[in-house]
Image (tube, rainbow, N blue to C red; front, side):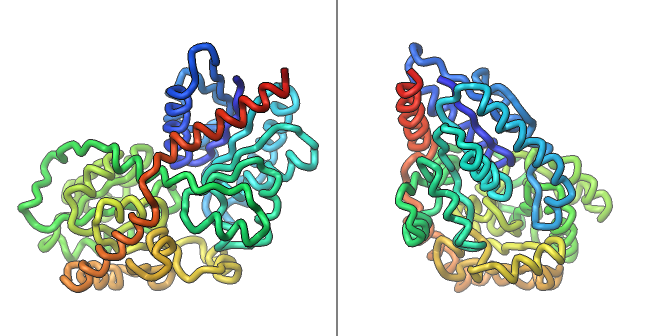
Length: 382
């Protein structure tokens, strides 16, 4: 069984890794599975995965930033089409990264490539350009990770949408907390700094976090929990602000840090949901290219950007965006998180979010869909 999988971002790489592990469990030895595609270090570690293109060269933010590397995306789309026309894959799986993958799906339709496409981690078209959802009619399965998405797509006349659970829920549930050396909950309150997974996010937002933290070092114990691949960049910023050694870094250990934290300052993204599932009150930050943000403001259909607030359908955690994302405002909102009334309201909101997400295993469910579609197409090839 031959599958093509495109996971172009760090988070998609991790989620795809869990899906392929689940797929391995669900297939018998008599059905060998080979997976080709784009991925990162997690997928590279799997013997059944064959790298076509490294995800580290992709994963950009914003409208303007993507334009800088447009030739790379164009070449990759052409390479994908060549592979799909040359090899008999039973299934194509696209994950997240809508700016690229929606165009790829359009290529499949225009070139009349008769391969079933599954889209997992759907584009947030309910926030941007809902009319673009129509191209998704050509995928055989749409696998949603947010509970309100199926209803949105059905309003657009797209019926083959299934909520499969959220992969973050199972990741948090299955994590076994390891002690974080040198951090003791009995000391000053611990505040986690979560600067994001992309270099441009860190360069835009992490300095604001550090400027906000500096005057509060006597009252709080700040710790940084970046992805492993961003540890060098985080240390560089700490040295620039003369905070290296005063604010410890625990790269790749976000869940272990959140398990002992009383509050967090988080860059908007999946980490906001992870922080909520660990029941840590948070302030959400976002700063980006001014032109990208201006365009986003013009086309956005939602008022909030954090997953917590979107799933709850109300403001649960404070968001400081663009010009409001200043060290002074961050400090003010952080201090408010320690007011009993504010903490209680946030934790109540987190309980609502957890209830709406449910408990099903996203990876196991997605693997079943991939196996079902692939086996059907395998029979057609025969």
